[in-house]
Length: 438
Image (cartoon, rainbow, N blue to C red; front, side, top):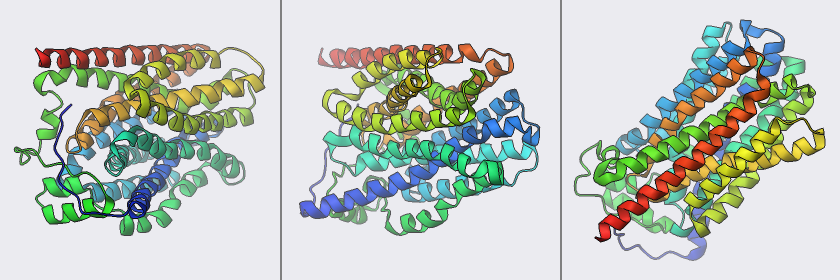
């Protein structure tokens, strides 16, 4: 992890700092809420689309389309961090929201599985581009000792969107059809985006690295943030990417990527297929959709608990413990039990599953400085998208083959792998630190 000195700040009152920082976090929360709704609405309408053979979808084709969206996210996350360093984080945020909003509308208007898959791919690109930049904003506009909590708070919006998506589906699909669920998911952006465009500031660190020192120092003073001096070689546009591999950093980077692979395989595999697997296991369709809501409500609670805990003991330890516990509860989701007990199990699985992956981002964000953070987050999320592609695909393949009952066991194994990889990352960090003292 690289460290950097900070420049002096103009004085500002504590009340002004809290108010202005809260506004930035609130705007990022609102934008990520849109991201969450548009991400999870597909899984929420999928049982009805498959039941009605809409657009000729089968479970295998539906799993492939889910992978298209996640491949789009892969590209979006990888490119967004670097693009934000070149054109600004604020502009990158707005472009990403416009892309996934228009693509979600296009999904609702699709008349073939090909069109549907194309728009889900484009939607995924925009969704993936937003998340690492929003997390970077949260970390930059939060005091150093509360950055994991800020990450957790922003990611509660993603799970809130995941909790709202099944309710949107329940409200609209039966009476108006699946298309209106996608259209309704896109409409809130028309209200929030103009407000965010007016109020969201540019990143002071980004302004400084682009040579706009006076603006950067003014923003840092206004918001009471630390302002790190740019590195001497900041003119190299790929320098932030190169820093992920320099000075033995490559081993830690690789372990972070593999942990993210496991975490996103869980998030998108379980998130997309939970309603369908539960139907195949004999539960009522209404219960199956509400299981998704409970999963995401658990995720909201987990973000706050994990964020507070990570700021106290370190996010790496939280990731390892959370992934181990996730393996237990995800496996239990496939065990036949009463519906009431199963709701509690699903809630606990959501509490651990989503926040475990979020603390992977917090780990990476605190491991890198302000300048490198968006690129590091973009790449760890982007490499994790291979898991997000594989998770929905393998779920669809298992359901198509009539093996839905082993799906949760497979996802539990992914959680164990994630815990192992984060443990390996911790070892590489300690090894490098010990070598530096010699």
